[in-house]
Structure formats: C-alpha cells, structure tokens
View 1: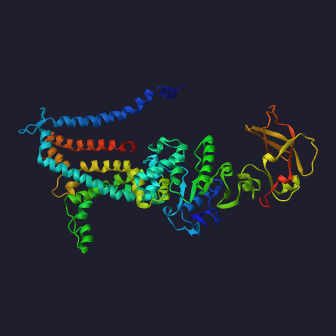
View 2: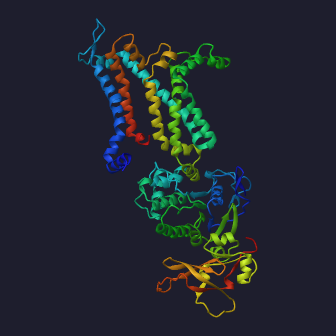
Length: 332
Length: 289
C-alpha cells in the first residue's frame, strides 16, 4: 500500500505480512513512515492506494471502530474526565456491557496490570508508568485480535522502561495476540520482537528476526541504525580488508592486541592508536584511529577490573575475523 | 553599577517589590472602577427622590429595593429577561458547537486561520449597525420576508423572537471562541482512542468531547448570558413594545428621573450574575477560563 500526504509520500509501496500472535516491531528514525503504517492499520488514516487485510478480511475502508484492533497511544490518550476504571471500561460501555459487569471486568484488568485499588483515581493522579498500564488494560480489555503500540515506552525513564519491556513481553505471551510495536529505540526492538521491520524513508530496508537484523544487516542504513557499525566503503574495504563491496564490522567483534602480535590466517590486523576511551560501566568503548585517519569503534567488555591508566595514545592492533565482516553489497 | 542595573538587582532580590510594581495599577483600576462603582450603585439604591423637586435626597430607605422585589412589573420583566438571556445562550451554543468543532478538528491550518478571522470580523462593525441591520432584515418586505414568503412563511416581525435572534447573532463570536479554544485543548488522540475502542462518532461526542468541553461551554455561556442580561439597545431597536431590565433602568435614569430606583433595578441582573457565576464556579469551569 501507499500513503501520501499532499506531494509527500510517507509510505511507499509497502508490502507487509504480519503473522498471528507474533511480536512485530517497526523500527526507524522519526519521519520514516512507521507511525503512518501503524495509523493505517488502526484506521486513523486511509491509504492512498492498496489494501489492508485482517485475517483475510479486507478492512481497508472500515472505520477504526469497525476493526478488531486496538491502540496504545504514545501519549496514552486516557480520558481525563473519567476515572481509571471508567477509562478501562470505556470499550465495554460502548459495546453495551451492563454497568456492574463492566466495572468488574475493568477492576480485574487493572489488577492484572498491578493497579488494584487505583480504579477510582483520575488519570492525572497517576505516574507515567501507571498511566501506561491503564492504557494497556484499556486496549486489551476488549480482546482485540491485534494490539498496536505507538512508542508506548518513549515517555518513561530508563529503569521503568526496562521493567515495562519485560511486562509487555509477558503480557503478549499470556494474551497470545499479535503486538505491532512502533519504536525508534533499536535496543527495545531487539529485546522485544519476534520480527523487526527497519523503516527508512517510507520503505522497509530490512525485515527479519532481531538476530538477522543485527548480525547481517542488509544495507549501510540498517548497519548504522541498529547498533553501531564500523563501515568500510568499497575502496577502503578493498585496500584494508581485501574484500570487494562495502563491508562492516560490529565494535564488539574487534579485539585490541599489542603491536607485533603475529598474524593469523583469517584474522585482519589493522594498526592504530587509541584516540578516545569511554567508560560505560559494563563495557568500555574505544575509538581507535587508523593510519589513514579513519576511526574504528571498539567495544571491550569489562571482564576484569582494569588498571585504569590513561590508554589514550597507546599503539594497538585492531584484530577481527574476516568471517565476522558483513558484506553490505556494492551500494553506499 | 548603572541605576537601571541597580534597580534590576533590587527587583530580582525582593519579590514583594516586583509584586507591588506589577499589581498597583491593575489593582487600582479594579478597586476604583469596579468595586467602588458597584458600591456606589448599592448605596444609591438606598436613597430616595424628592417627588416634588425631582432631586435625589440622601435619605436611607429600603423602599426602592422592596418595590423592585415585590412589584409585578419588575418580576415579569426579570423573568422575561432571564428567559431571553437563557434562550440566546442555548441558541448560541447550539450554533457554535459545530462551527467550533469544524474549525478546531476538521479544517486545515489555512482554513482555520481564515475562519477565526471570519468569526471575529463582525466584531469590527458597530453594535448599532448590526442591530439596525437586523431591524431592516426583519421588517415587512425586508430580506427575511422576501426569502420565506414564497414558501408561505412570514417575518417574525419585531418582538421577543427578533430580540433573541439579534442578540444570538451579536454574541455568537464570544461563544464560538471559548468553545473553539476548548476544543483545541482536546488532543486528537483522545478522539482517536474513543473510535479505536469502538465508539461511533455520536458516542465520542457525547462521552468524550462534550464532558471535556463543559468548562469551555460554561465560560462561553457567561459571555452570552451576561451580555444579554444587560442589553437594552437591541430591545429598543427590534423588540417592538417588549421591555427588558435594561430598558427599565434606562427609563428610570432618563425619562422618569429616578436614579435610586434605577440603581435598585440594576441590582437585579447583578444578583442574577452573582448566582450564575457561583454556579459556574461550583462546576469548576472558571479554573479553565
């Protein structure tokens, strides 16, 4: 399908199959079209051309209220004039469930997201994480076939985000329904998803499992957007690595050795000096400047407590296996 | 240190000085012009007029107020005035809601700006011009008559319906704008969430939009209600023989030359507005103005 806003093509000839019950992420920078795809699936936007099917039924021209899909909004979109329980029960109220019954279901749903006893508060009296859970309860209480999540963790702080990631994953397993998750956070996408679609400029750059996306990125864009990559464009790859086409290597696959370490078959050794040392806690990131001025990012796990003398300026050999190189083709 | 800088340092250190500087002028205005004037009105209502010379005498009495509260004429006119003001308010809100909704949620940014200007445009024309325009529209053989007569209709003529019509027209911008501003503050995602959860358009309006708009609607109603309550010019121009409270005040100040009675009558709309504002305050609407 295609979606244009005026002359701007937000989603360009997209073709996507999402399996039932999978945790599917759409990952990309802002403006890459991922949120538009989500809004097309939800029915908030209508496609310029193409169709959307849900379990084989064409829902392209159906209004949002006619689709068995629910959304968790980025700003949670809780109704401020209703209590938390009324918010959760809203979908049931619309469906004509009697008052007592829907309150019972709503309170049970709140309990399942660890918000028992919060039913009579107003959304404004809750923290961000709690609102997030209310939004989840509200969207799942009507038992949709699929749940759409638009950067739901974006507004939470890091600790809460990590906790909510676990809860989301557990929720998805227990409900057994499809989750379609939009994020610009590559780590989040890798952690949660069964499959990821990486978006760039309205197109899917790559579609695959987290391991496929990370270990064998299909393009320089994916290689640099998902995780960090040291990319060697064609000429440099040929000169330094002896391979043809653009190639990239992940920082954690590079090992630093003392100068003069013997060469080994299948291992590339590039001499350089350490330009910058960034301590990250679990790991240390180093920037190694090669003879031609190119900088390699290297990630060392902090397995032992190192003597923290200033390593800047040290001469090293950056070594990695040619087998770990990822070929990105001859474009780029 | 330059004097200007010294003053800045002084002001940044002492917040009470900033406050005084900021509030003296507006507080003076509020005190002198509003409160003192209101108090003067109350005091005047307790005076009397020498029936022989027609001069105001400072002689304390509750007669005027008793007259106004118990007199059949004043009761009828008060009820009529409240009725007209309420009707104008209801008509304006019913017209303003769809217009404001279109402006805030449907129109694109360009059309939105044009519509805001269009809504404000009538405020540039004189009140009198607009009232007389309605007089002409509603006259025998006027625009209204020539449009509806081929279909067997007729002009409502001059009277209370014409007053309601004209006042509703005059205050419409004051009702549209607060409701428009209120709708602007309702995030689109809430409307989408409602639809997403299965609500059709009408249900979304009743369960989400209107409850969230309540403060804005009450704020808007304060404008149309209070402006209608005090009006006497429109009634004179298109009201035929009907009178509203404003007319009674006007005749007592002018023709009847009874300023204390006029003041006592003027206390009626003031008390009505106090009750109305208290009710609005209880609903929490004033916090959102």
